[in-house]
Image 1 (cartoon, rainbow, N blue to C red):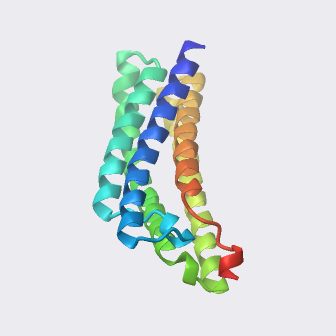
Image 2: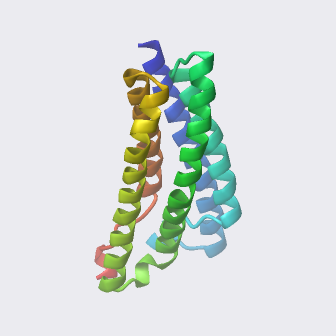
Length: 181
């Protein structure tokens, strides 16, 4: 129960941190635009902001996993080597997803119906790529960690990913609103 509480607290802190950074950016954009319209509420982070945020989140994710996945020294050496390979393969998928979100934030009001469908198809393709990557690593992970520990890693990985995705998605307006008919 203690480990579960720790995960909830740390994930909450990650979301608050991420929201705080994005909110600060949004407030800066709103004051520059001098407008309260819906477009001003869309967060468009710079590449530098996204890179810093991603580095911070990667470090926090590793800490969360280390704190909530007890391993022997032998397991840890093998696990972190495999985790680093997994992370390297996941990085371009997440990078593309962030760029897709960024472009959407910049263009959503002027999107055509076709553009909106292209956007959502690509989003779902990237989700599928991340899912396929996790599936690819289940067997190698289970070869270095017992089943429950391997499952715990994937549970932590998914929880963290879902929390971050929820935070990002909540910052984006829906494709269809009364103003964008």
